[in-house]
Image: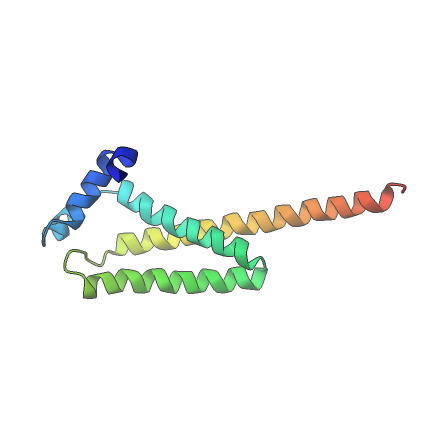
Length: 129
């Protein structure tokens, strides 16, 4: 089903994960491409969803730090506990870049919401009832 939805990308990822020790060579040979975008996008989405869920500035800052630590621990753990994955600084960099971008997007969302709420509050006070 995944191959129908995502095509060649899923096949390539599946081959990379199932390559019995050849994953290191495949990982070293790749350039910034779809795998880096997956790292970026995954952690950006995680950060955005968490930022919306906590909906406070201190919660956003705390969750960004916790998510950053979690992504780095995940990256280190895959090199230690997996025989088909390796620790890559480029993956960690794209994880952190995604988290930073997600944090900035949520901050803009907070500011936009505050601006709309402030405008609506001023408008309600002025309108006769």
